[in-house]
Length: 90
Image (cartoon, rainbow, N blue to C red; front, side, top):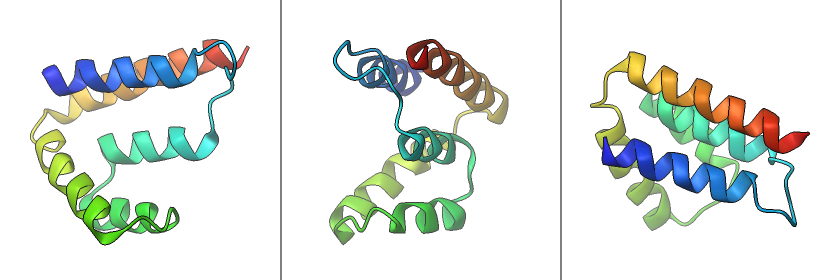
């Protein structure tokens, strides 16, 4: 439960900051993939950022924890983050 609250707070901070209220499409896609995609698909998605191996490894470790959450809860979080992103883009 704590991880989902952290994700929500980070998304709010990134999306609703007054100086830059438009959500980067790549960020939205990455967050949705982080929550919903399988490990192989997400790893391919991460490759476009050309992150160091250590960062990718760390992200995949956190993904293991996220994948333990019920899929329905991850879908709800994704939908909520989508609604927040819509409001921030206005």
